[in-house]
Image (tube, rainbow, N blue to C red; front, side):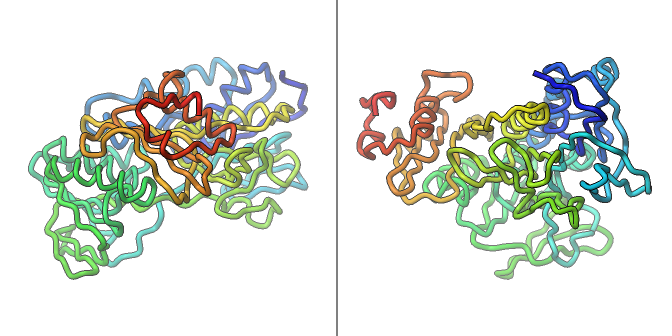
Length: 413
């Protein structure tokens, strides 16, 4: 597939997306100069264990590496430790903060995101943690001792998984959220309520419809204060309030941005020769329209798709978005993309924590979620979630009563 491109391919970002793109370029036969500009010291890897197995000390990261460290040297991929200051499309150069410039023939922006700044007094106190990097995870592990009191700020996937892991480690955990239940902003009140029950049953205190306004302590964190006036003593706090896409390096370059870097269906920006993928990319999906997705599966698969586009492919990136979450003994799988919906249909039992939920918007099936049921949509092709994915792909408008009917074969709807 590779076609001759004079000059180097340059990838900005050494996360999962950047590493996967480099691997795909070599797989497709691209043999010329290939550089990865990296801010983080680690080789490309997947971050899911940072909230789960690695955080709990149950696994290392070797199984989550895009490739073994020596693979890059063997395949003549140059890692350049550098911070990028800007992009000059006219000169086809990337400018580094050091003052150096690197030329490119094709440029992939896989800059990912950074933790959203939490602007509250005391947020710089020792004991207040963020979690995105290995170093940050290691910092939490050093203080996450049995019996310690932890506050988790935010209840999205990072926050709820961290809360679950800390509780499994024997910490006393309080989770503070603006919503009424963990994950309710993404999964809705009904499914969020199930996760709320799971967390409470495990001993996590949920402080709902509230938010942290201040961290207090003399030399280090001693307590958090909420908007409603609660004062919660703690030894550590983990702030998990989402990420912001790293788009600053394209300022003034002409590359279009809006909630990330805008790309078309093939991961191309509006500027010739520049591509974007992963958490930073606001992608024009053939099924879902504009979407910026911050999950492992998309970071991996979009990186490979962008690499093929860099080599001339015009095939649209049509990946049916999916992600998973492990919390305690419970397994959640999600397929599709439904930032908004007007109806949720449940097949199975919320009370028994074993169900598949279907998200519809104006009658069209947009996404499905499975808790302890439905299978892995990428592995179990005859599972309920995989069947739901095929309905989503063809724009199906299944009757809600049939979606809820245990006897109705989803394949036939």
